[in-house]
Amino acid sequence: MKLRATLIGFTAILMWSFLALFTSASGKMPPFQLSAICFAIGSIPGLVVLVVNPSRLALLKQPAKVWLTGIAGLFGYHFLYFTALRNAPAVEAGLVAYLWPLLIVVGSALLPGERLRWYHVTGALAGLCGTFLIVARNGIDFNGAYAVGYGAAFLSAFTWSGYSLLTRRFDAVSTDVVTGFCLATSLLSLVCHLGLETTVWPATGFEWLAVIGLGLLPVGAAFYAWDYGVKNGDIQILGAASYAAPLLSTLILTLFGFAEPSWRIALACLLVTGGAVLAAQDMFRRRIQPPVAAE
Image 1 (cartoon, rainbow, N blue to C red):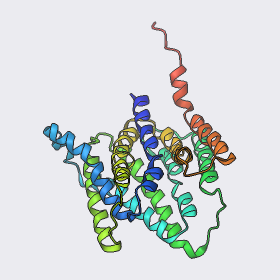
Image 2: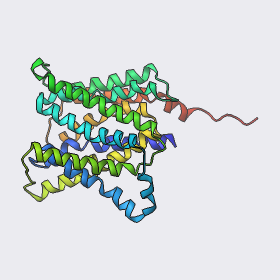
Image 3: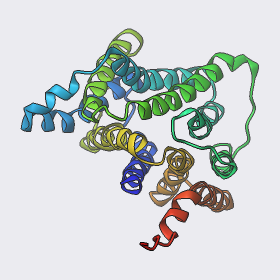
């Protein structure tokens, strides 16, 4: 059961790896407008399930703390991340924001029934180093003038890791509630768009397809898979393995001609993969442990 849930959670990481490709192909739509549309699309699968099986509507009746956690996690993270990109260089802001997998691994020590080992932290740090090689390929230059952006990036990392860890505490809450989180995030993003941005629609059918792809996968199904994975799977392995997202994203961009292959990517592959394997030691040991003979 735990292995299956962990693998489902990992599909979210795979879907997030397509985020950069689909975003690059979606045209020049401003971020909050894109977020509003994509989260609206992302809520459709959950709405279909509720229409087909109306009895599941009862599962949406949850305490206020569940709704506040979910909406703060999805909308709060994206609001802070977009704010960071608006107020700091993308490379530095992205690197700070990608502290969230490490924060999940370290923070998991606070969860009931979880034990933090040295190889969990070491694996996550290896993944962070691999991400550094990819994101900061042209060097980094943290400048105090961008303190607001860096602060927003750190808060975004703290927000997503906090959401993921708190979600684990709500393991009895059905993943159906993610539908409501997506709808609320879409509405709040629309409010931000109307107040902060100028509306820009996709110019071609191909751009519309990219927007739909974003809504169905990285900004849709991925959140349902992640919710199920962190509630029922191995959250430490998922945290360390999350560094595969920027690596896979770069490999996909390279495959489609948006980036050039380099030694950095190869070394990042070793660091991220090795880190994930190191962090997953417990799971490997459980898989190879011989069954106990009956007395």
